[in-house]
Length: 419
Image (cartoon, rainbow, N blue to C red; front, side, top):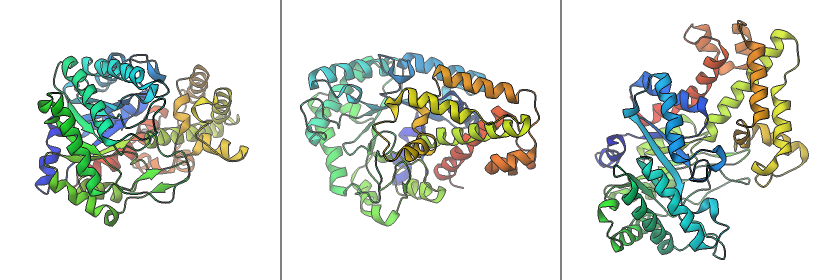
């Protein structure tokens, strides 16, 4: 856990250091992150969101205890030490139940936080910024802080080891924007300072000064986001005043959400400027989907049958539109393209579907035992071709999928561990 608690001190000393927060429940993504952790002898932070994993199962069907077992099994299989595994809970608050009355939504949130804490999740992001039934969409900072302290009290009572906390009131939408974006309002320095101050008061009012001393980061908007078709790239000049506010916030760094698809130099600039915790999720499953669709075309080139995976996934998504319908907009052609290829990567919700799993099994069967020629890797998975051609990467279906995800994670590694 020291890799997290050391971040504020290192930034205050002028040293560039950060950590990647892998926000995904996909087993291949998690395996790639842990394999890279083995290679670099580094701790790995993996976070589950309130919608993915909760006491009711979330959309993955897993409770926090289930998620721990799931990740630890992958760690054991890859040779990654459980001692170096950090599990986090992201956006823990009433969001999954915000259609309920506030008292009922917070009761559910308390049960969720207790489940995460009892399962030993060491990093807890408290997100109570959203209004519940009958409330405005965004709540006053005082209300947000009071509810966060209420949840922290639950975590303190349930956790076998005291967790670290991330707080914040200007929290981006999980999974990226739901509309086209062309600019963002960077959090003001005064707002960042007030966020920390109001949470400190709320924690103190509940006798949670020791818990607040373990708050290491605040979520702010540094000016990064992605929609279905566009990415807002970090501009250090626009966030200079916000970054400078950390001098007034000893013991804190900033946590940056929605950093998916940022260029490596932008990620490095974020870490340098104190946005030391970089969250990434859809960008990793986007890379995995690219690899899977590329492998489908490779199978077609090898056996002469048409590609089949995209058509199967289209059927799955159209049959159950709940995970994309209210997020994607445009003509039927726009919707079809965005379902498969949008940066928001709404397709990630559908890979566990039994029909999707059957389609993946059929793809595996088509490629089973076949040698994948370098020329087809070059044609359909071009970013991976140099490593294949150099003999560094075995061109097997699973290895290529892992490498596609690792390629993104290595950008984050370069940003968080410069030199």
